Image 1 (cartoon, rainbow, N blue to C red):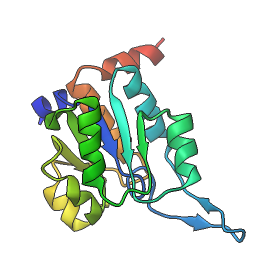
Image 2: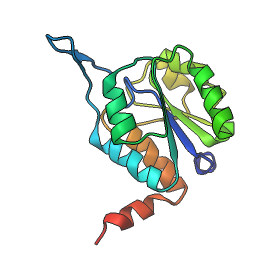
Image 3: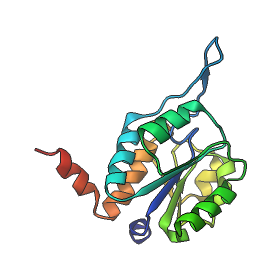
Image 4: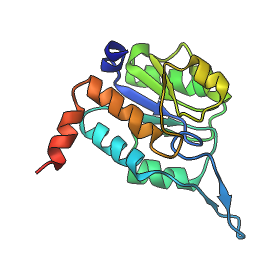
Length: 172
C-alpha cells in the first residue's frame, strides 16, 4: 500500500458522509447547514502546500459547499450536482492528464462505487455503507465529518515523505 500511496497526486472526495457527517439541517426559513471538521480543512490546506491536488465530486449542490470548499479551502476542482461521478472523473483525468494510479478517491455510499477500477486507491470513512467498506483499499478509523479525510491525507503525505514538512512549519 505504501508504494501505491506514493504515486497519489490527486485526492478526490465526496462531501456528504465523507467531509461531513452526512447530516443536513434545515432551518425554519429553509436554509441548509452542514458541519465540516476543521482538521479535514487543515489537512487539505497543508497537502495543497505540498503539491497535492484536490477535487470534489458530489451529487448535492449547495452554497455551503461553494463557500467552504471553493472559496475558503480553494479546492482545485469542485463539481456539484453530479449525477454520474464516473463521467466527471473521466473528464478530470483527461483535463489534467491524470493517470489512474495517481488518484485516491474517498466516498461513503453506493453511488461512489461508480469510480471503482478507475482510481488507484479507493478509501472510505469508518462508518461507510458495507458495500463501500468491502471494496475499499483503505478504511479510515475516523467517521465521516470527524477527521476521516485528514486521516487519509496524512497516510498519503507520510508515504510520500511530505508530512514532516507540515510538522516543521509549526514546530518551534
